[in-house]
Image (cartoon, rainbow, N blue to C red; front, side, top):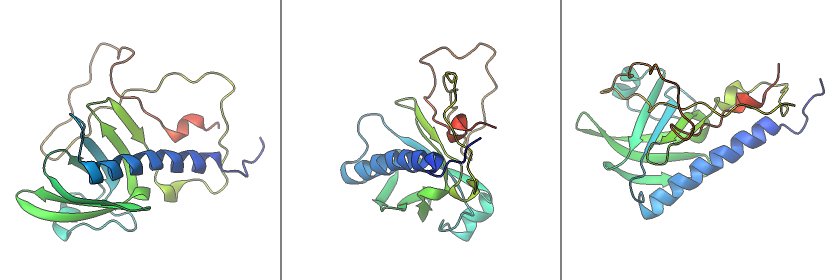
Length: 175
């Protein structure tokens, strides 16, 4: 198998993070349109993440935040976003680098993105487009928050058009 010197996996991941960056920048400038709201899951101990010790103790591995009605001072830069949120009635300021984000989901549009953290990308990538068509992506359930529990799995199959459209980088990798 030939070596991918172009690093298509990195280019595609960065392009998808650009979608996330653009959506958050638009929300910061104009607010959330219509019923749009975002579930963002990130690694709480990733480099550049800033959380209070209280939140880090509560979410030692990963954390999901919801940007809907009660957030403030959303700012977006090239490599991260910052936002004010309230946790248990206590206001907090979070700094979240885009490289720490594991998933993004907008349930109003049934749109989701999943990322592998930047620091775990293979040094010698073997990403290639598959020779055969890839099946449609699976639906992403709404991320779990501290107050929610994961719903029981459904017995019936997910129908086309139901659930989120997910883009996963490992879908394009061949072993």
